[in-house]
Length: 167
Image (cartoon, rainbow, N blue to C red; front, side, top):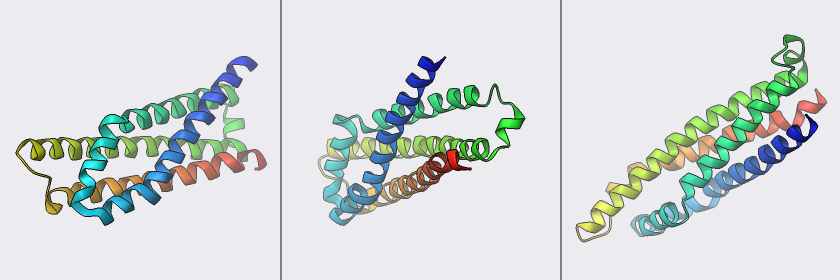
């Protein structure tokens, strides 16, 4: 059992670090820079999404993180024993985990929005030109807002996970 917990914690922590770190980087640096670039950012964002498989990597990291976290919670709680769940640690991990699940769902919405941006850019470029600011602005704004929402949710999740041991 200890070996299983060790493996699950390694997966949970590494996937979480990648997922949260990437989201924080996107929300704080990449998307604000892209917004400043205007229509010229479309090619960069399309290349980032397509060639680096960003959406796939973030979805996989988020999914692995949440799955490992759920299994760890089930093990730590003794199969969802109410006496443990209602402790400070149980509540902190449980609430943090639920917020993490919401972050994964909102992240999925972000990924779908980014794929719409990619398809729009490909369609417009096939017609002979770059996307106009108006065509991309709405989707880019939605993507940026969703990314910031995920960053906030992951921050709350990290707080819950970080303090759980001390409650």
